[in-house]
Image 1 (spheres, helix red, strand yellow):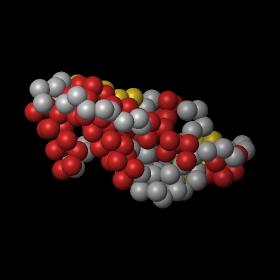
Image 2 (cartoon, helix red, strand yellow):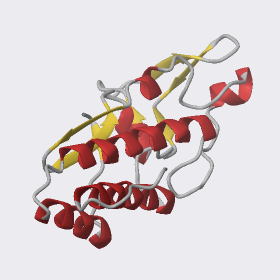
Image 3 (cartoon, one colour):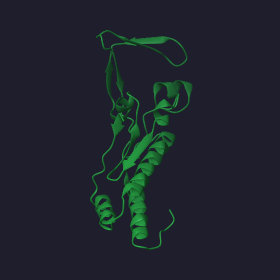
Image 4 (spheres, helix red, strand yellow):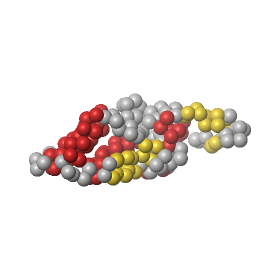
Length: 167
């Protein structure tokens, strides 16, 4: 994957340790975590909002032609995927341009010349550089953290024979 996140949270890591201490394979819990991350990331494309709750700056195309930012062809949001194993859960996107959208930055021509691109509504622009604002879509916010802890609690309760709660 070209963009991914690492969760460093004491409560989440503690819950995973308790599950493993019960002699359980953590793979199902890790699949739950990856699915939560994938779903949350997809929701950010729909809401046009970063993990911190801040709305993305609309792209020029979205402003001029309508539609949503980062969704014109659906390639970026369509590449959201996750993986999980006994000791890991990850999700991200596998597009080479994901990082510039996640973190922002300046795009310059490789040759040091100019960039030329089609403008929404017709015509072309020729510029030395394009500054891309950060439009973060990967990350874990408080709601995601709560969802992950709930999923882990259900797995732990199931492992000790307790009733799992819906969610």
